[in-house]
Each structure stands twice: as structure tokens, then as C-alpha cells.
Image (cartoon, rainbow over all chains, first blue to last red; front, side):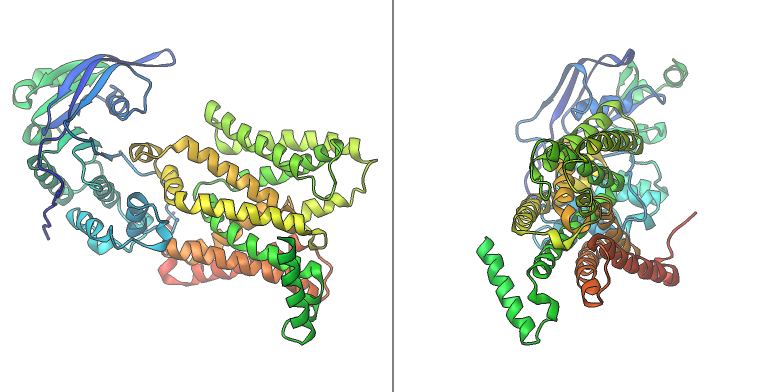
Length: 242
Length: 301
């Protein structure tokens, strides 16, 4: 069932992000060199590039989790509410933590073992419904498939409603239905003004959904509108470099 | 506070005389141990769920065994050998924090770092203990190693009560955040959680709880009371609610039965050993339920 997400707070455009000469070196290894590009407010911006090219490091630099140099500036007229979908959830699969417990854990201060607080229930119901997990809310996380766990990570990123959504390969593990659900969700969020920045590998999807795309392999190889920059030769160059 | 304990002891003595409570409740040390059991049970059972989730089982064992060195240092420094709390807390907190700092900085696996620190602590403790052999009766150390309800006094109960209140006031509001930090530190950070700070806070909590429980459960066995009730609860739980409350229940029952049963049956065993044996019965029973029950057969190879 399609349940529209409602952002009661605002429908203005989300923040823009500026990467200005960002460098990242870990030990003696240079991970990122002179990265400069911008993410426009309220757009879907994809980050592509070969494995080990520094995509996740760039995202983690934006999150403030990597000791980079250069400037990463988030500009927004109002407060920035960030949603983040990590690549995977690392946990002991035998732990008796249900989908509801997980959502309670991320959304409320009261211990998850006391159940979901009444004030959070409607928004949690809505988020789970939006990612198609309503019927599995009593399942323990270890019993969920990889795709279902990815849906759960998406659901938590919607609470509180973000105006900047960062995703690290959210399609990994999703089946066709899951992929369609994600695309619908992203378009809906975009229409509500949310700025979306995501790492993605499927170039066909990128062409279909992204407003802009940036290819990173240590440095920026190209950046622009997918229809203009995703030519066969550029893709070949990007993924055969290094 | 001590007059409050006196009041409880007077009530228990009265009820034991009129036959409401077992005869052994006439003795002050029995009431002391029951009071301690009622604090330690919920505390270790509740925190144990987090210890199991965070894979810190052997950390608490290392801290427990470091307590032996703490006692030896306390005796050398002239503290009373029955309750050298300054040295115990001082050494164990330092031990726990340095161990965690080393683990963070070297990025070595937890079991390696804990193994190294455990060995260093034991070696150091063995050397200091040899030095203090002439100063105290070495049987005192049995009480530290395996627990003894006979030695619990009002100071021990005060220490335990204060630690329980502090840990509950700090741990419950931060429970979700600590859990989140162990699931995905990156996600936790985005949600405004100070992952490293909470990690050190949790290490500090385990350390002070371990030290405060030594008199009842013993240095060697205190780690077991963190793990066994939580592991038993995990065997039969299908949610966090079950996991937490079963763990608290198993831990509290283990403490109470482990303290009362040997006295009622006149079995001369250390309280720590009896408590852990009772907890083990819960574990075996829940493991059998898990193996037999279809709904829990979700383990895959």
C-alpha cells in the first residue's frame, strides 16, 4: 500500500553542499585529492566511480567522520536535518531485536525494551509502511533478508524527516520491487525539496533518476548532468583508470 | 543509611522469629546478603544485555581479575584488607580505561588486547601478592576471588547502593544510544551520538559494577553473572523487552536462590559459586527450550 510521506514542517528546498578542494590522506596513502563540486539544493546527486575510488570516504568526510582538509560547507536557510543510510548494519544476528525495537532505539530516548512511545508511533508506522516493512515489524533483525535490512535502514533515515539525505549504496541487496520502492520514495522526497546525495553503481538508474552525477576516482573525473556526462567513453575511462 | 539497614534487619529478625521468614533471616549477615543480591541481580542482569550485545564478556572478566591486583595494592598501601575500595576502584578503573584506550588506538581485536592486559594484571598481582603474604591471612583473598556473604558489611552495601543508583540513572537514559553505537558507529554519529564518549562511559560502568559486586559474587565469577542470565534470556526471547526483563529476572533469582539455598540446606559453598551454578541451571533449561522449540530454530550454518 502506498502511504505518502508527509513533512509537516516545510516544503522549502533542502540544503546545498559545497566541496572545495577536499583532500584526505590516511597514513601515507592519499584517498582523495582536490575534490571540488557542488550539490544543488533539492536535487538528487549521484556519486559514482570504481571500487576503492574514495566514494565512501568522501561521504564520510561530509558526515564529519574523516580528517579531511579543504572545505565542506552545507548551506541552508534553516536547520539541517540529516538522514543517513549506511551500506550495511553490522550486528549479531542472534540478538532478539525486532524491527520495532530497532526503530524505537533510533527514534526515542526511552529504552527500547519499554516499547515504542505513543508520540513516536505514528511516524514509525508511516516510515515502516513506506518501505514495506509493516508486516515484518515483529521479526527479529537476524530473520530479515539483506534487502529487508536495507529497507529498515531507509526507514530509520526518514525519522526525523530529513532535508538532506545521504545514502551509501542503498540499492545493495534490494530486489526489483525494492528498487522500485526506493525510486518512488526518492522522487517523492525530491518533490518535497529534500536534497539527496547517494553513492550508486547502476549507471542506468543514475541516468534515469539523478539530476547530477559526479564521478570520483581519487579526484573528480567528471561532474554534470547524467545525460551530458555519462558517455560510453567517459564511463570507460572512469572505471578503467587507476 | 546504616540505621535504615538496621531497621530492615530488625523487621527481618522479627518476621523470622514469628515464622513468616526462614529462621536464617534472624542473622544480620543473611539480611545483608539478601539486600546485596536484590541490588546486584537487576543491575548485572540489565547491564548484561548490553555486555552481550557489545561483545564485552571477557572485558568484565579481565576487570574482575584485575581486582585481585587492586586488593594487593590496597594492602601494600595500608588500606583495610576487608574493603580496600580506594585501591580497588582506582586500579580497576585505570586498568579498564587504559585497556580500552589501547584497543582504540592500536585497532587490535578486543580479545587480543584483553588477553594481553589480563596477563599483565595477573602477573603484576602475583608479584605484589607475594610481597603482602606476610601481612595478611591469604584466605582473605578467597573471599575476593569467590565471594563471601559473611564479610558483607554496611560499607559494602552503601557502595553497592550508590553504584546501583548512579548506573541506573546514567545507563537507562543512555541505553538506546549505547546500543546504537554498537550497531553502527557511523549511523550513531550522524544521529548526534558521541560514540567514543559512550564507549568509555560504558567501560567505566562495567568496571565499577564489577568492583562493587566482588564481595558477593567474587572476582573470578562476576563476569559470569553479566553473561549467563543475558545468554539465558537470549535463548528464549523474541524481542528486546523479553531479552531485558528475562535477563533481570534470571539474574535476580540466581542471586537470591544462590544466597538462600546453601544456607537453608547447610551446604558450605562460596556465595559466588552457588549463584553462578543456579544461573547455569537457567541457562541449561533455556538452551533446551531453544533446541526443542520450533519458533527458536532460526540459527543457520
